[in-house]
Image (tube, rainbow, N blue to C red):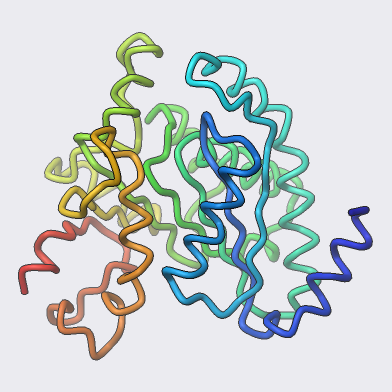
Length: 254
């Protein structure tokens, strides 16, 4: 589709009043795999908005990690333009970005670019969820320093036993990954509150395989209930969407 055709299709979609959900896939995902994941997330979460896939040109190979990082850099402008168009056409309806793995790096770079372009009003319309973000913590801090606290709380879904992120760490001279943050570290909670970020440890959820890199799919089916005012999981005034650190296991036990 041409850009004008795409924007017309989204604008005319009867679901637009409920918003738009943009999925940004991660490393080693080809187009059919990314499209399948978007459909799965839309069905499991029972989302009412328009589902949109931002498919960047991953090589779709586990041996192409560096090539995929180059593809992320190449795709930053495209994602920034796409988010700008979707917010413009949403006419006030919410626009949510769900980014997985290396897609988190791409998303943060696009948000940083929008901030540098002075598009603060656009950023205020976005809510961002990053699942197992494959980002160096120092790079993430530098990105947040530019973007600043977003109007809508950003959510990071993390697991320390994520084997894909462990491999990424080893490929990056054993540098840690944001998606494997230790939520027990008090410095992490202080930084999360200062940056208006909700960091949620989802290690208690099952994964589809031993890599433990796709737990966010399981979360999508129960996330709305967990944040509901009437949720049986909710404790006091705490919700997973509030800035700070949350351990999902504690919610599930209550």
